[in-house]
Length: 423
Image (tube, rainbow, N blue to C red; front, top):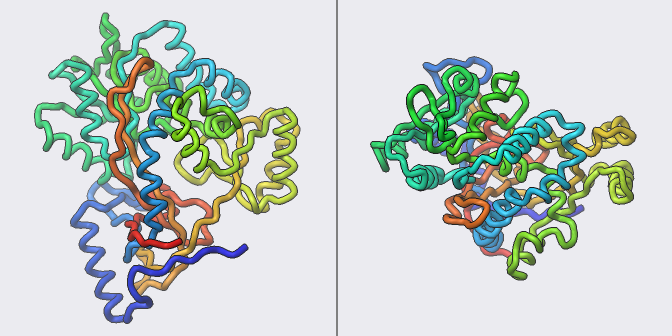
């Protein structure tokens, strides 16, 4: 299979002396500008490493970048409506929750809240450019003394990214109180008022922003699951709410790729066509004819696919020849319904220098591939969407031979797009 190659933004390779000086200078620049992460092998609150980054911006097709930016608000609308469609989520996840304990536990919280009839305020599903979204949600709640609660891990490695949001929020509105708590802290300090307001000690919480609680390791015991339920029962605006968390599962993504699945959520034919155009092949592994066909496709040509569970955070997908082994182990068990099969995307290759802590200087030229993410803010309830906008982007780059690409997970590097016009 021929792979398209993108030109470099400047002529390379660079002169060795110039390259070494540039690497040294950019290391200082990224540290001075907060592009840092704490070491997972030698953690200390008193030291920090720079996050892996690309020395030169990677070229990126301008048309594809603009297309991704343009469709973001449509995707916001789609996921918001999916998250508030009870029947769709129930039908889509009915088999997955039987075999995936983590997704099943999230689903039980959602069912509990639905059965209790708790009235929730609008939720905010922003990923970056979060600060204004958080402030808008705080204002919607309507209590100037209430705090924004950030749910964090016991040990935070990606501290600079999180602190930047906190400091920017204080710059924009110094009156807003922000608290950082683990789910264990919430178990010890949290409660509900008579009006179902979330309380941390004596402080009302208006907005809860999850920077943790996306993997089983981050909700390890019944205490932490109890905290997740407590928050969901409250009137606090959640980012994400439990139904948003479920709507973001791989199984829901696969279900939305089926013919006719988008029409109940989007009324504009142009929006439907635009969303459908960005789908790659997504296949469920249910016990039906389509699922059996997907199983056979994976066995016949495993290099063509990626096998994905209902997880976030990197390091969970299965690639290449290992797909055949995994399929053979699960094909006759219910476990297969917790996975989806996705056609592997083969993006164009660029060439550049990846800078990592402890890496050699001068670095070697490497062939790399990039993944563009467009971030958005959406605030609304089951009846209407109040805020819907695109707020920024992130480009993650990895060497072309690597499977995973998460920066915080240790696989990729931060990058910037250098837009070019190509056919």
